[in-house]
Length: 328
Image (cartoon, rainbow, N blue to C red; front, side, top):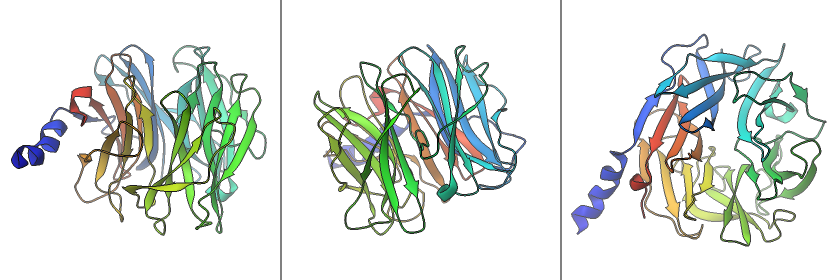
């Protein structure tokens, strides 16, 4: 029995199919991918790429997966004289596809921008800049409620404080209200990059990246459909100051993709929970030395999971994860 428990994570990982989205690109570095299903079995991924993070030549790039093959990367958005960051792809309830991204000289001076598409990302409208103080979803996909309300997990970073917020829209992103701040009381420079998931019928939970001083994935809860939130608390999952993502499966289980370590950005892992509190043993997606970080994860129409992440800042990797590969 003990041998089986030791072998189980290996057996589960063997079912996961991984591939690079591209082998060659017109930029040496990349980071912060996002993925969305644009039609059954077809996907669009985006990320930022350029000389290095923060360089003025960094733009938003994307590629499309169809019939098992990724297209070559194409440039989607660029800001003259500024670096771009953290694209986020998602559909609103009216089936519009949105791409939100950030631009600026550093995270403390970011501004937000957005584009929309009605043809699955083949063409995009002219970009729109968000009002000062609004950044859009900062890293992870928003949670779209049954009535179409958008809850975007966002955050602000300064040299002194990291603070999470929620941007809420009831009109498909035309106007927004800002909810927060959501803080970890014991550590001002504490939490960023929320991802919001439902747990049962009456609870919303956001999981957040934390500093190494905190050292664990954090969470906050809302019992009124995202209008107010608790202060942040810690889970028992380590966080090395690196991004995470999460989703609620169709069967109600919670999936978290993250780096299960207190230092560095390897390994990259997936854990599963039935209640959002107790987590399975993590399965391993990457374990070699290097950086494997800033994951994104969605559930496709066929039930499988699709994840993307940064591979050593050199390429973006994509994985297809059948439900049978997840711990129960």
